[in-house]
Every structure is written in C-alpha cells, then in structure tokens.
Length: 326
Ligand code: F6P
Image (tube, rainbow, N blue to C red; front, side):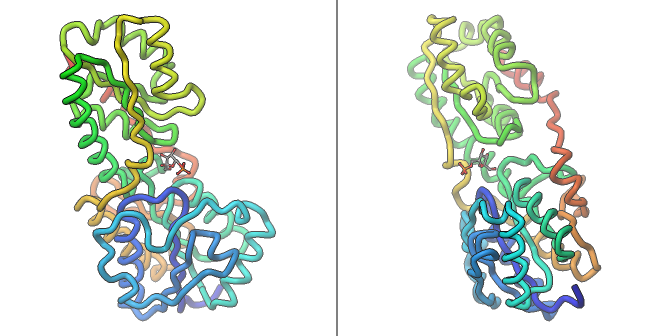
C-alpha cells in the first residue's frame, strides 16, 4: 500500500472502559496531522459488511467519560474465514482506507495480524481488554476500571458476608488470566484468590481449608477467576458443599458488570496516550505492532509477541494475599 491518507478505526471483541477515549484520541490525533478518519462499526463486521462512516472531530465529542464503545463491537465469525477477509479488504480499498487502528484483545489483534500479513495492510493495534493479558504491555485499556468495579462490589459483599458470618466466592472475569482475581483480592482485602496460573483449583481450595480460613474471622471472601473448564465459583461452591459442609458458602458472579462503567482517570489517560501514539506509529512507518506500556513508557510490540506471549502474572501476589489475610 502507498502513502497513508485515510485511516480506519475499529473496536473489536469484548468492550472495555476506555475504548471511547482511545477512539477519540486516534480520531483527533489523525485529523490534527491531516489524515481523514473512517469509523468502522461493529469491529471487523463493519469491514466485511461495509458499515463505515466518515469521522470528524465532532464525531468523538463528549465520549471520553463513556463506557462501552460508540463504534459498537462484535466477535465477527466471517472475518475468521479467508473469504470474509477478502471481502473486508475489497471494502477497505473501495472506501479508500490505507491503514487501520484496531482496538481490542488477543483475538482481535490475532485477526489484525493475519489480515496485515495476507494483504500487506498497515495496522497498529491498541490493547483494549479488561483482562490485562496481552504480551509485552504492563497495562491494557479497561483493566484499571474493571479492577475498581470489582473492589467496589467486593466492599459491598463484605458487609453482608460479615453480617451473616459467611464465606463468599466472588467470580471475576479474566479469560484464563488471574490479573483481575489476584489484584482484586489484594485491593479488596480478600482472604484468598483462586487463579488459573497457580496449581489446580483443588490444591488451592485444600490450602484455603487447611488454613482454617474462616475460623479466626467472621467472614471470608475468595476471588475466583472464571474458568469454563472447572465451573469457576459455582464449581468450587459445589465442591465445598460436598466436602466441607460446615462452610456456609455463597456465590456472586460479577459477570459483565465488570465491563461497564465510566473509565477511571488512569484508563482515560492510558487510552488517550496510546490512541495518539497509534497515529504517530503509522506516521513513523510502523506496521503490525501493538502500542504497549513498559515501566511508564510507550513501546511498540509486534503482533506476534502481543498475541502469543501472554503477560506473565507475578504470582508473588498470592503470598501477599495469604500473609495479609491472617
Ligand atoms: O476478554 C474480555 C472478556 O470479558 C473476558 O474476561 C471474558 O471471558 C469474555 O470477554 C466474555 O465474553 P462475552 O462477552 O462474549 O461473553
């Protein structure tokens, strides 16, 4: 592809608070530098089925504080097929789009990687997911807001847990990564976290029980990372009921609540910086990289690394939770 004049922006996969701030930053930085911007609706679906509109600076007014994504999002099946991507490329060419900024999680950036390789399209990605699980970046857009939502919810659960002297298993999202569960547990003063990165759930459960986690306190809260294979918090509660009937366990699944809400200041700042950098990256001739952050600095991470080398969770935090919950 030749010189870039027109840039398409899309949000894809699970929405994350701060995506709007990122769309705003991408749009305004691009226009500021003389590019045209096309907003692509419903992620890759909008490319495949031609749902796009010209964006002006006004298109992104008053959205920095809004959760969700004004562009809508989807997990587009058609884009996973060669025919779908061919159609997307044809539509992109007809719309005069020379480069893309894709905001999403690992599935969305894997799709971007394949598309870029097949059609030689310049693409820059932004890590937009509450899971914080993309390789090479310390933070993803939406993670901080989701973490704060979890803490607020657990604080409330603590009130009823304490009143009834109960054990609560609070299930959080994470897509097989324990960031939200572990850091949610540290931040809310939970008694334990059960995460996919550490041994099996059974071992972690046995450890909890052997510590007599409810005996010295009048309530206990365990943050459990969602796990479709084991049933997550529901699966654990079933086992607790069968094996340790003395524990009066209750389950709360926070679910999609964690994806909503106005982004925190940290997420707005991260999304604004990353969104602006995506345009700078294209201007510098960068291709097929995700914008990440390492020790406070913005960095470029090849899609190949971002989507295959999951960010490693520091499980030392598990010891911290244990030590601080005595
Ligand atoms: O990747 C974001 C995420 O919220 C994960 O934490 C979760 O596993 C998944 O998306 C849920 O996806 P859906 O909204 O399609 O049910």
